[in-house]
Structure formats: structure tokens, C-alpha cells
Image 1: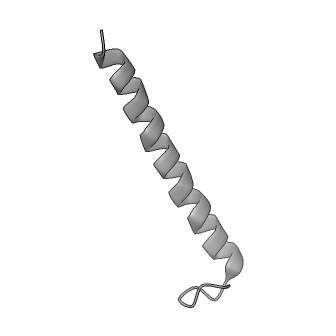
Image 2: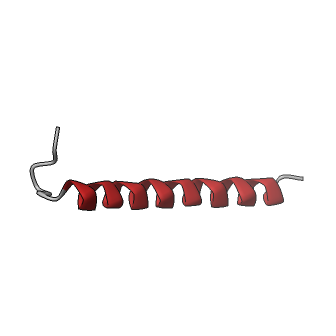
Length: 39
């Protein structure tokens, strides 16, 4: 199913990859901070 608001599927896929990459980066940063904070 193609997104209704985005007529270009490649652009939509790129946006999705950026969002997933940012989410993964935030998750990694939180994990690193949690590891450093824990004794």
C-alpha cells in the first residue's frame, strides 16, 4: 500500500529509513547512558 500523502515511494522509503535510523540511534544512546550510570 502506497502512502496517500507521499506520491513518491522512494522518498517515503528514505523518510522511513531516516526515522528508523534516528530511533535506533536514540535507543543505542540510552543503552550506553544506562550502562555508564549503572555501577
